[in-house]
Length: 421
Image 1 (cartoon, rainbow, N blue to C red):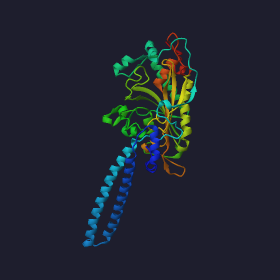
Image 2: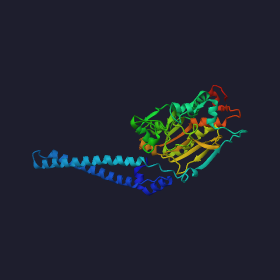
Image 3: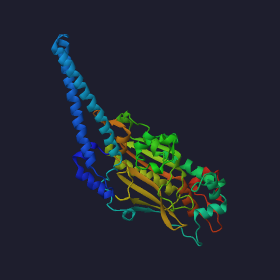
């Protein structure tokens, strides 16, 4: 969440930054609630101070005197005033926090200004696009022909947008997961296997709740949730803790299945693996010092790019504009991989710098050089979305006779197999 003091001291600047995102947020309630909060804190402190003075006077007064009786009545009145202020203060603080939870992050100055994805800026392109002497098939056509993707039986077991991955397809997906985890470990990330179910507090901490609750699969009446991404459990590991500066940067990597309702996306990408309710992903998360977060963001993005390069998959890096950036992000690079079937680039990873936005919601702090606690910055990115990587491998490595060549980097993970047929 945003720093309350910054919002109240700079409402016009915050409003302009939010307008650039296309977010219509009324900050007047936040400012008014903050003003009332200060009044109540002062009223409570005044009543408590008066209580202390009256208590001291009562200790000196004759318990049978009229003065003592007057002081006792005064104490009762002061106690009621203090309790009333404290009760209203809790209500105001709860309302204030609720308001702040719905305000998105402020984009960094380096983020391109634009209304929607059409204004995203391409920063890099890697790899020559494959040339075929035949019409390339889409991954769903390839997977069905080879018997490694079974969409009908996946839907029969659950519902649409659940897929049964079989035989060599399942081995290839497992090979991708292991390759990505090994790549992350070699670059200094601590491999972690977190719970695949998290509580409401964790979902609020990373920004999935309360705004995007309809997109989550909930359990226990909304007390628990299937993870939409490993970002949630990994970033919340240090919830409400104060860390020492020497622990930074913290670098974590995890494989998890991910679960999303994809609310609002009905009718989009209904065929194939691009938009599933359940998919596998390897996630990278960093908790870093504020002054290093820009460089750490770049490094994390490069680590995701290296996987695509090792697999020989053409991609481009897109710098998301203010109108397309995620709710919690201050800056984001999307990596888009080339898919020959439809003949287009599709997102395969979002690498985001959140500044101190998530840290404030989570309550994690780090001592600075003088021992004073401050909020660190959090960074995360997919490295990579496994299902979409599988799609890219199938489509970019197809042969005229319908086989799939295995990228060299994955051959050791496939037991030496070099082709799927």
